[in-house]
Length: 316
Ligand code: UDP
Ligand code: MG
Figure 1 (tube, rainbow, N blue to C red):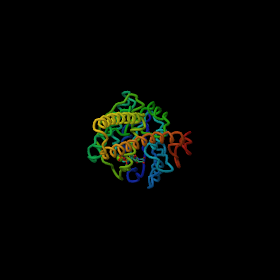
Figure 2: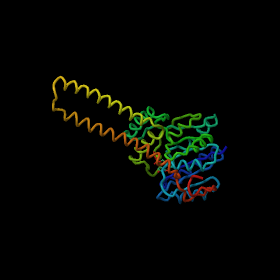
Figure 3: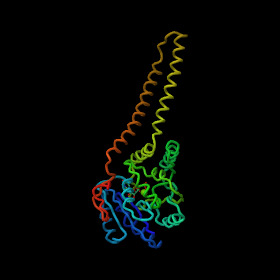
Figure 4: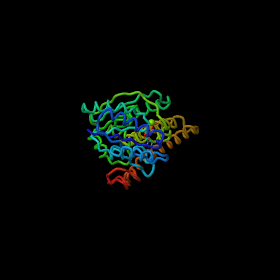
């Protein structure tokens, strides 16, 4: 069999050579046919030069694609998956947080007939705050959204060819891979490993980016949040109705009274805020429709050593 390793890289000059060394060591002991598909996601450092060097050292088993700018990890993974020719594909980070040794375990499970083999990391070593927020987020998303997401499950996984083809058949512009992986289904198995620290360089995720990523997860899969907005609106309208009845009865019994500024203000501002939030929610969906209808490519390639004609965009 042939195994493809897909590695999105953004400013990874500090660690990419080490990664290449370690992964080849591991793969050589497994004695299988393999290829490494690196995707340079518009790095501003020497990552591309390093990739050229790696491709020169091992021309038969190294491919790289370099984007014209930073398109994000999702686009990087997509490009890598399109580029991969293997019977199975492993998605990995360049920073060695995904231990290469686990690949043999993944292959074992793959040979047992599983189509998705997921390595789930423990959260030890993570910032307390970040893991707490993550846990809360996953609980929320599993409640609201159709797809099942598990805390600690990242992109580190093995995908069989049918699973890869299923992923590639989904053309959406807003890609939220965690959800897509879950959506396609197939025979899935998960095993745990200990979290490792980044080998070199630093994390590319800023807090704001994480928030946006979280929003994508909530909104990419269905319109249930919109329905939530409808229920909230209905609930509030019902409350307002009850309140109106109470006031009316009061006015009939006691005659008209002047006080009530606080109630009035609280109601007006509260409702205003809620309306804004729901407009924003609707806007978020419309924005997505807007991007989808443009049908822009997910990424633009400026350089590659790949044989396929794949240069201008990714629509071919
Ligand atoms: N990455 C990417 N494009 C981006 C951000 C990240 O290709 O815009 C890659 C990065 O080079 C690494 C992987 O995605 O190989 C995971 O990133 P990182 O280690 O910074 O994330 P963390 O492990 O902190 O979640
Ligand atoms: Mg990392």
